[in-house]
Length: 502
Figure 1: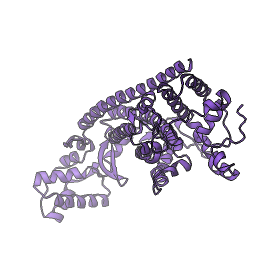
Figure 2 (figure 1 turned 180 degrees about the horizontal axis):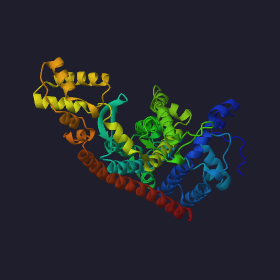
Figure 3 (figure 1 turned 30 degrees about the horizontal axis):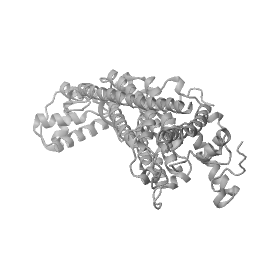
Figure 4 (figure 1 turned 180 degrees about the vertical axis):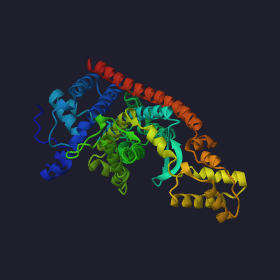
């Protein structure tokens, strides 16, 4: 036992801390330290390996220090004897090591570094691994989206704007809209990862260190792509990489929320287009008929809260002088953000994978309320050489009169369109009723779309091919990233054990 009565670094300079400060500053940080236990310990091991290899620590001292750190790593967060009053991982580690290998060895771990670069390094590892996990789940979601889109490239349904029937579409085309969004999310995640996966170790407090450390060696040991060069930047004073991660996750959550909201509305009896699996739903405590789409409701709720993530993180880091230590002293936000993002993705993956799609009901609704009349206006332009605005007015009057007469697109009369032509433009329209009803047919509308990326099933399949190829590349890229970081940590632990055995 070290026999220390005061575990705080401030003892020599300031004396004992008050219980109020311990209760309000130190103790609230302990849950965050527990969630980052692996990352902090790996950072300590890499630093100790580098100090030993560089000769800053004598071989015997380095071996003893590493044995203590490896014991700590193997013990894990659940078995680690946490000091209940300290919210500093440095203090927790030095106290643990002091009891195992003595204070003389324990106190040498901090040679050539500060808590600033130590904490920044641990946070970067945590964010790096979080992004890898997020990307894995986003790839699974995109795969589920593309699978359904391929099956339903011709599954007719109403398209909506303002939640009103707009123009016919297909369920596959609608899903590909989300496929495009999740493709952008995957690209953003990969770009964000490159800036997050940089090494902070060696920045020290802000000015670097006089010790002959090897910053690139610790970066290599931890699987980083490079170092954050400027010592002050590396030391944790410009943590825009945290803001970038949060912004990227906020955008992803926004896309998840929009998808969940669409499906949530379509899950209602009035629509009846889709249905979540029974295992993802709940019922009422009083109304036994209810099937409430709980998975969608959870994603919607988390996505709503996510809209506040970015301004919260920005506010904690903005407006301070020279440092971003407000983030350090604030409550832990990143752990909750990471957990919520993973939960929303996992729920979305299972929901889409098991989604029941009532495509016949969608198809019946597709042309039920005049959603093809823009095509009729186009045909009037083509056949009668009219300005589109004139054709728009004619069709608008035709729809109004037909609705007033209780008619639907299935039982329209050609004379009603002719009447609207005379009233609105003083022209004679001589379409037959068969021709008129064919123009207003919802499936005919799909095949009439000629523009690139339209609801024509041909265009949906082309888009599907492109996003499938992009998804394969994302799978390969993230697979390589995961293998690289995993191999680096494995190699680090092997090297640490080698040095510890001396």
